[in-house]
Image (cartoon, rainbow, N blue to C red):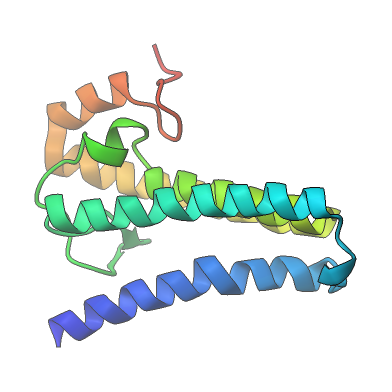
Length: 166
């Protein structure tokens, strides 16, 4: 049952991030004809999508294998087993939130592809909601890992390799 819950959590997360949010972005943008999109936008969107999804998937796999769990609670509700180890290497040496950074890159690609304000507004709304989630996770990580997490925060940015807090 525990394994099924974990697989369902990853499947639902993948469905939400990879399909449902981009579909919402397309829908609120007036469902533009995808065949009419210029090739350059397809190329840029594809590059961003591949980079973003690759970073997110690498992060998920790395966290599962090396961290013995997942860092994410969905606003206080455990989605998958919590990590037993603070991850500071692999994709986590690039960012404290590489899964989310990958999602942001992916959705930026969707915005380039659609090239419409409503898609951008969905993206901005997603960022706002995810920032609340990040703050919640950071609170839990500080509690679970204390000074080790504080040192990690000082040397690694929330979304980018360099911390902006100096």
